[in-house]
Image (cartoon, rainbow, N blue to C red; front, side, top):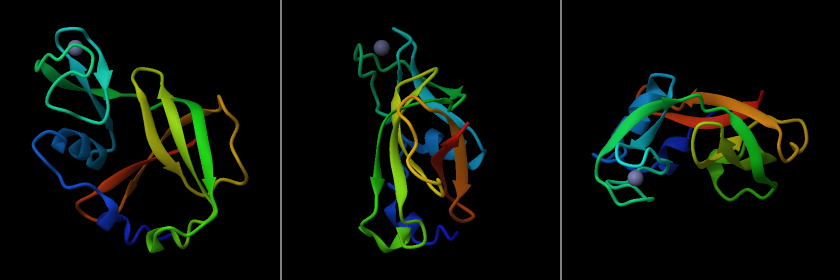
Length: 136
Ligand SMILES: [Zn+2]
């Protein structure tokens, strides 16, 4: 299925978030990790959400976890998703990090809360990739 149109939905790459997007392009989920309190966070910021430290490093994540919550979308809100209806938007509790939002495309029915998921990084074009999830 085409991911054409997804690029227009992606946030601008900034100094703060560039490592996240570079990681996806390399096929890897990367999360910020605080050098002071070890908290891991997403989305990226120039300081730690937990303690305010600016000692932030990027480290790989397995991207694996379980579905904390989800919605199944049947309404076409954006033309980029026209080939994907219905699709799931899940809040995933990562095993090694925070909760993170991601689409689940091509599921056959609704997933279950607590279902194990793994990252399914999809290339949008030569420059950008997006994080989606699939059942593990
Ligand atoms: Zn911290």
